[in-house]
Amino acid sequence: MSDEVDPSSDRQPQMFAMDRLEDVFLEEKSTLPISIEELRAAALDELDDDAVAFVTGSAGAGRTMDHNRRGFERRRIVPRLVRNVDKRDHTTTLLGSELPAPLLLAPIGLQSLYHPDGELATARAGASQGVPTILSSTASHTMEEVAEATGDAPAWFQLYCSTDDEITRSFLQRAEKAGYDAVVVTVDAHLMGWREATINRKYLPFLDGDGIANYIEDPAFRDRLDVPPETDLENAIRQFLDIFGHSGLDWNQLEMISEMTDLPVLVKGILHPEDATEVIERGLDGIVVSNHGGRQVDNAIGAIEALPLVVDAVEGRVPVLFDSGIRRGADAFIALALGADAVLLGRPYLYGLTLGGEDGVREVLKNFLADLDMTLALSGYTSWSSVDETALHHLDELTER
Image (cartoon, rainbow, N blue to C red; front, side, top):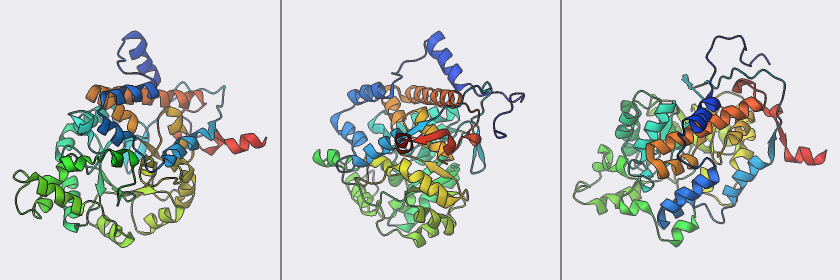
């Protein structure tokens, strides 16, 4: 266990669990439900039916979303006991930056549907805990506004490739100028998934002008317009729908996009090991294993099932992050044990945003980090460098015995 934290080390232990429990039990600082199920129910009660359909909607029959959750259930943590876990270190180095934990906030667009402050609140809450926010292209606030709210804390920018290369180039230049630390190119949403909940309601928030702030403020996008969006928003929305999503995107174009920026470029949406190998061969800088939270393809492989296949193909050559289905500390433990370098938290922080704005996101983050810390310690480990597949049993292995 040479990778464990030395108990005699002078390094200050990270006590996420004890700090949070002290808040809850002694200072009564908990205002949101602790249970993720109760948190979700309370948040959905606050939203109108359109927003509920948008945040809960999945592709087709919702089987991919179910696979994401069941994939975690099929893997069980095997705690190791009688180990000194008094000093724990969650610090993680990712793309040359040191983070307090292997955790980032997943890119989620249109956050003003859930709270007026939207991505500004999320960015401020993440920055307060040292957790990077990955800002969506389809944000309710511009990347410049969110960068200002983030301050000096790390932040990444998520890019949807446009059919207009000049808009893509402009977005990348703006992200660099605003101070973002990396770009995450989402490649699994070049077309909208068949999301029955929103289709049934005939609800597409972009038609109301939601989620297009980055576009209507972009100089390359505005060059396409005959009149400014302030004069004719309806025309700007039509232009956005014309250029949003790029179903013709291929590996050559993705490589070209990476050459447009000096920032590290990660590819989000990878599930197949051959695609993971292609990412490396094309000189890109990282992978996010994700099925878009089950929102794109019905009955696709669960992201956690794909993770070890991708990790094996990558062989440590680039960072592998994990997205889709993370709800609790135990989920993150499993993903990290299967080889992820960090995990992305999505819907839970959105529920916190709905119920409490910046404070709500911060509280969800504190709860998640406390749960993660407690899971690490109670499983018998003091750092993530020593957690691997030997910390897990697969359900099939258990039933065979």
